Amino acid sequence: MPTETSTDFAILGMLTLKPMSGYEIRQLVGRSISHFWSESYGQLYPSLKRLEAAKLVTKRTESGQKRDKHVYTITAAGRERLEEWLATAPKPQPPRSELLLKLYFLSPEAGPVSASQVRSAREAAIQELRGFGFSAEKLRHEYGDDPRLQQWLYTLSFCRQQAEAVVRWADETLMSLTSTSA
Image 1: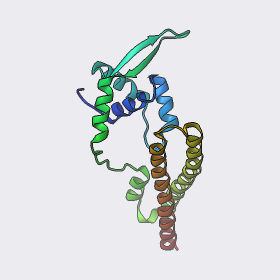
Image 2 (image 1 turned 30 degrees about the horizontal axis):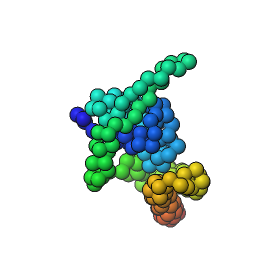
Image 3 (image 1 turned 180 degrees about the horizontal axis):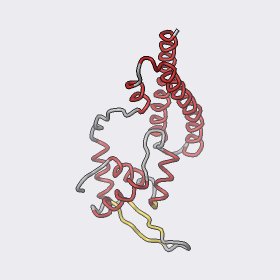
Image 4 (image 1 turned 120 degrees about the vertical axis):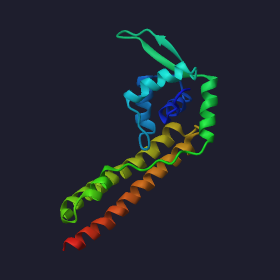
């Protein structure tokens, strides 16, 4: 494969669950791994073409009422390449945070703006925390017999703890911001 991307491997991983169309892959990403990974249609379809050209997936066309549906299936070569990738250490990824970028560039006199931004981030993290408990229970209920359930719960736990850390950081930062503006 000329250029392998994380998107390519996310798609291969999704196709280990079952054959799917691009639309179905995108929907499943939204329901399963969106707490730590996202794929846009703009990333998905070029990757599917690359994977098909590299013979890591096959495509079959199903006739539909409105339009044809292209269903992709991972090949043996695709499974092998995915297994190789899974066995390698992840590449370091610098975090990207619009919040931190704004805080970095806001002037010290912009304390109220900074506090507002931090409060918004705190509230968003609290909303995420509310969803993680529901997601864990839903996974246990729907996939209680699946041998991959524990792996899926590990990812949810990581994201839950990350959201808890944001709340702690926000509380600490807001205390500092209010003490310096007083």
